[in-house]
Image (cartoon, rainbow, N blue to C red):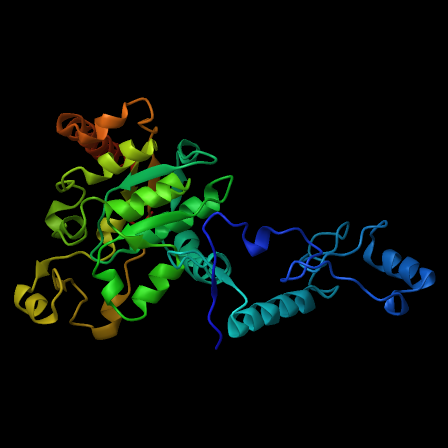
Length: 352
């Protein structure tokens, strides 16, 4: 299998290039001998209902056709052709990744499509305040972390992509353990995730990306069920320092519903030490029910984005001011905690 091409981050993605050009950038031409005759063109226009507009290869339904006519008018053939072209590009390596390993085509067309039913049908995620994420330019989303397994980070990424008017993708910062696990490492890179370090985060912010961070880390995701929705310590405020240096706004994010998907009733520290992991959860179903214990409970989720906290008004030396970092960190943490309590009061039920 051929290797994928690594392109500079700012280069225009293949999917956004102008139609009518091949992968090599040359305009595709049809020889005159193979062009349809005038009578055939008129017949084709009458059949598709188009007035002088050629049907584009990526259209699911011909322009001007009634809704639902795609499947009966060759829509499935176009979808099949699109799928085969996608497979060909993957096999031949004719797809693009950035220098962090982010594969936009695979993420948008495959991975997010697989995650979307969980967001829409299983957890029924309700998204509020999406307008607080800027249309363009950098932003740092800071969210609470919970749920025993990091499902909340994935749902956050799908929610922003699907609900934001610009369809923005969140570049999540993950712990180093994620990039030590086979398969998980590759999938995380393809999704645009990167190591939770100041250098990577600042690079992405300076390039105008939306970056997501969950400062509680393993302390939040591995806390017992009795401490649900109680925020843990937000580290040393490194995310604030990164936002200050990049001049990016901080968007507080509160997630309700993830705490109950795997109620963590205990932690086997001995097993965790043997496996080299931060904790080994004991839930009502895991490990007693085997693989079935990995099925999360179908709780009802709410993700709310708060008003952004601007950082571009501070001087350059503000990033080295420990008191300012402490105050901003505390402000973000208190905003998230207060919103969590408000959403919990408004929630009718864990499952509805």
